[in-house]
Amino acid sequence: MKKILKYGLILLLLSGAPSNLPAQMDTIIRSLVEGAARNRPPPQQQTRRTQPKETTTKRSVRKFDGTWLSTQTKTNPDGQQLSRTFTMVIKEGKATRTLDFTNASTPEKPFYSNVSELRRRWSFNSIDCTEQGSSLTIQWSAGQLSDFIPKTIPNNVIEGYGAPGAETSVYTLKGEELVRVNDPNGVSYKRAK
Image (cartoon, rainbow, N blue to C red):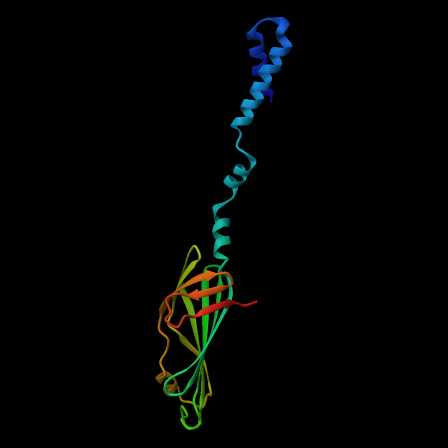
């Protein structure tokens, strides 16, 4: 403001006639103030410039953060009931996943000895998580067997069922649903409440 008054007084002295002095001074000061206001950026733009870029990135990654659940049940050609429950936890750019897999056969066709139900739990860790808009790509480690029931079944029989290998999964966020798009079984996760 001091600069505006200083330049206004200089212009006033250079402009001449004392009889028009108050009117000229008012016009000069008004034009200087209006010019300064035009050159100042609006308050909203100033706020955007000072906001750190990391805050925006963290906010977008967090849209995937949370616990996600998926359950699938089907019957295979041998008449066995297969149930899969996936629990995926995503937090700050990393993910873990468990797969609880249950095979249930008829008493006439047990899996081993007289065991007609076998439960296994596999654990996975993310190797890499990449977000792109509403899409999330996770590169998963191979599954690690973390538990099985009943314990009376020998390890070599359990291992004979195989282990899930490493894989890359692509998910699309649709509201409160996370859909795996590169899975022929169409795994769809719901956000846990």
